Picture 1: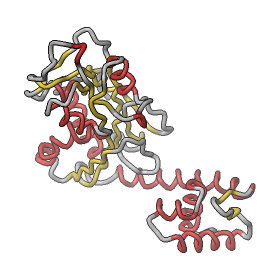
Picture 2 (picture 1 turned 120 degrees about the vertical axis):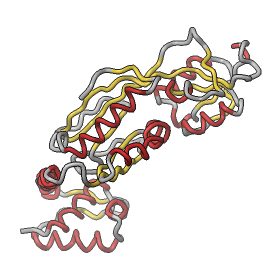
Picture 3 (picture 1 turned 45 degrees about the horizontal axis):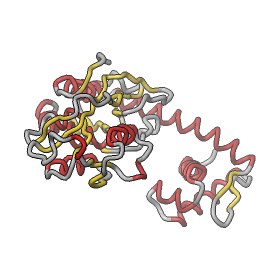
Length: 292
């Protein structure tokens, strides 16, 4: 029987494609990964990985072993989730992954309220633009702005996050749309839906500045740097800002709540889900689509 730790290190190498990448993912040193991989190959008496100068490539047998170990990993994670679901109700740690715009500008502002309501639940809020895997326990609950398709998970569309154009109330060109200048993301974010929407509105009008964080856009528009496209729940809540451009095209992002099916009815996880749903329900700027 192969050592599970050796198998786990082999999985990391197969996914990362390099020993150094696997080491970073596992938070160990390069030598440990190399030693674990060699030990597994000795245990199985087969070569699993071709170690090339710039990357590692699975052998034919290595690919077959990888497929089996992925199944083993999923089964081990399932055992852990079942055990976790049996924990004492409303006690323990729950990890919530959310896009930075929702984590920083909605959820983080209400952590004290959550703590007051559920003092024995430690809520770990992770602001992540990239999608995390619930099957690998990278999070217990996730909010996403695109429709999830992760196997074994339950997803529900909560509503949509509406966007609008905003400017400072005393912006010098407030009543002269032809002279508006815009606050945008840089070209690396050219395929992002809200960037396409904003640039479509701007047309040939100038871009005043580029910032790659929505919080930076909020700060810049507050100073009068230009016109920004903001989620309405952020822009409408700021007394220094005014929504402009009544004839602009409507734009929104879907909001999806995702939870692994094994954890969906766990009391502590359910408490986090209900809290998130309540926040979205109670704040303006969201068009609601029901409950989980």
